[in-house]
Length: 248
Image (cartoon, rainbow, N blue to C red):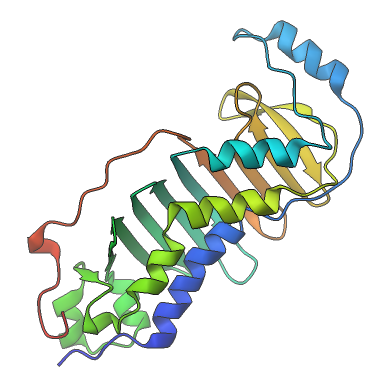
């Protein structure tokens, strides 16, 4: 018989999902004036002229409003505050897909509506301490987090994999005073605005809605944000890939 995954282990990865959101937030800082260099960058840019950059005093409000109007975002990066964590997730309004990796232990996840699945990778079953025979049954299988095997932890993951919760937590923390004046920058070849924030730095779209593109922190790592308002379809796992044994 396969033992249920420990409550502590699932909470650990639920916390990781929450940490992924929190790692993309918390911004405050200080700075100077770079209006002249921004104007120069706009004049020489091969793309359309940059919109006027948000003022340092109101940039938090601007970013928060844009994020809360969004319908999708792809988040990718790493966090090293309490061990090495990697995040690569697509958040849509009604679905989520991707993976979280902590210290080499990978946890692929899917959410479609109210249904949430976690795929048991070999590294996860090893971390969970499953006997080899039991691990062989669930390795690379998607397990519903409403199943007895997951000990009813679906609600925990549903919260952490909710678009509004994720984006809302980022937006609320970004909306803080104390930013430096903007400086011209580049993110993946696109014009951007850089706002210094103590040891943290945020990069925003140079034009349009000025949404968050990157967050950098020497102590916490780097998170990249792309595909705002570009939902990527997420399908439930095929039946053949869903665990259907004891505890399912």
